[in-house]
View 1 (cartoon, rainbow, N blue to C red):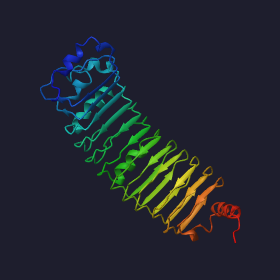
View 2 (cartoon, rainbow, N blue to C red):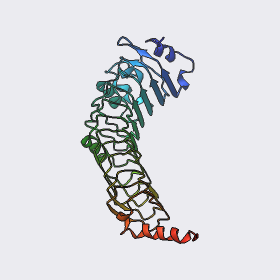
View 3 (cartoon, helix red, strand yellow):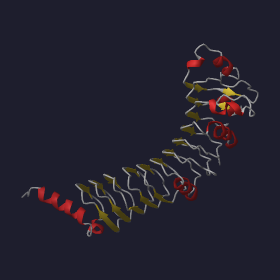
View 4 (tube, rainbow, N blue to C red):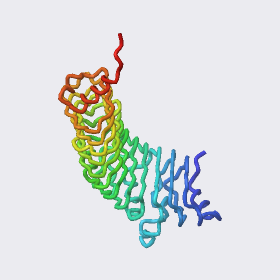
Length: 312
């Protein structure tokens, strides 16, 4: 049976309470009538999964009522996770922004099905995971200037404009994951800090343009509508895989790239590749006529041909 409203009182009076730094709760049921706040002064990490939370989040982060502002900075909570809690709504997150804005570094809200347009403004937040928030439509007043990692995977209702607006507001972003965002059709990313991008299974994505000089890894598996791929400043990218993608236009400037996989690119029509360090190329099953002006690619192919011994 789910644990009830008395849970926090039990934890607060436990002998180990002053020493608890990490707490995981699964299957918790907190009703509107819950009055006890979780008062673990040294708590740094809190995870709540598969639970029903109807009580105010004030109680989870140690505030018994909204008037108790004198204790606002006492919280040491740096990591906060709520997963598979269908009762969590947009208005619940206002408490997190108000109470933990100055300390929270990692926020995970996965499979919270009622989140639609939550306000997330956390100045020191570094990692945000909203994976599986199927009803999420946007993040109004979004402000996380120190964010380094963002996961918007399986946010089926997020559109181009919302995703682009979010990305443009992140000057420190290093990892971006937007797997299976079904309404994403075009994505342009300009970032001096981005190192990893995952757009896999974005079935509607037609154009991807990246101006990211520090990009080291790009995952684009099963982008079955991708028509145009432009990597104009891929100065840190070492390998590129566009295997069996329906790409027609491919433009790449990657000085250190050593490996290129173009297997099955039968629709390739326009191709411009600048990769002086290219060592391995696989063009099996691709439309090679589009590569006739790519000197580096042709050079690698020629070297490979000369290494094959002649057979009678």
